[in-house]
Length: 482
Ligand code: BG6
Image (cartoon, rainbow, N blue to C red; front, side, top):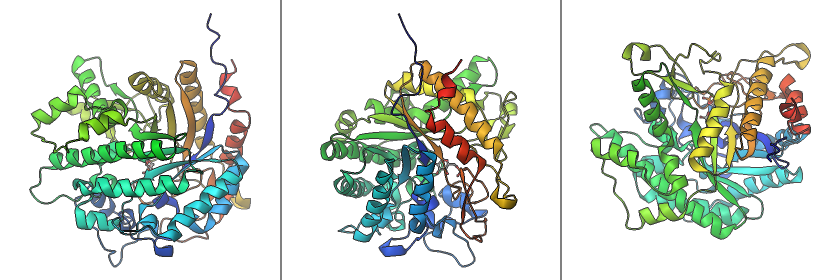
């Protein structure tokens, strides 16, 4: 009666994913304003800025800011896109820098030169039949919005974002069909400055500030969904979650309860974006933590009416937790939120847990929770590559990582999970968001650049470049062969 699914969908969007602030550089070119990420230095203070504990509204003498040049995609996008096309990309996920369009965020009119840059990038992608997948806000805000208004703390951000996103939909309505509102919206709760341009003032109730800011982002996201559907009826617009399933350290029910709490903390915001209302567990959390959201008169209706079309998510690692404080001390790093060391799994050079099966579990979990198509918009391995003589880079560890994850994505598809596409993180080496380093490389394409900014910026194909090209060429057929 059931024949089973025997391949990746025909129009599966294989590709790669990036963010403006991690690739473009040209940080003040053609009228662009400074962004929050342009003021996040390499080195020890980066994390304090990201956490919102240290303000960084003006460049400081002696600091190095990796985004200022990044990998200079701004001037090299044709070369990079040609390489993506050579690999056979069907899609390219990128973000737009808000400050190229509205340099201060609250300008009356958009910056035409900024709009033209993205026109040129989209045209170049479309020339090769590569579908642009656009994140409207991937962490970087015009710094003026953080400085003048306190970032997403302030409700005024909703109308500024509405103006920004509507400008994009109007301008690119014939070029872009896939949109996403906020990158990893749940990061706001963990990295308030990175996620929302928020710096805490002394004595401020941090949780109140964070959840109010999150509410503003949720309303802004819902209004972007509304505008997108009105302006580009055939477009799809999604949310974006930093995902990764959580395991209990033991079978103790208390451990499992910790798992649920951790997962809910992640899902909470996209529960609202996808289902249109605050879940019961969130209301209880607000009540018990003395959090009082200020709501506009239409807010709940807006959330209800304008839910997302698909769920975009990043998956790098699974996590593990425990109710035992002693076990909680055995911690390893991860994509911002770390994890109790899982004795069954290996970790990357940066301590991130490697768990291909977690990819299948995560796909199934999210699909069952929302019943909407999924788009895996980030996944990959950050590693130090060695450039050998004759421009050879043997990144077998990356191939192994991706291969094992693709196998599990195929299993999830066989499980019946609907997946639109897969864009691996950083198809060309780029600046690490977490550390600001260059040496944490994810790419199929090596960029000759070092942590201190030195290097020729030359692009070099790695072994994984040819491997990914073959996978795309037959639509991942090997993962469906018995
Ligand atoms: C995600 C972000 O959290 O993880 C990206 O959306 C980021 O911007 C990626 O680069 C990998 O993290 P990192 O810290 O290795 O760059």
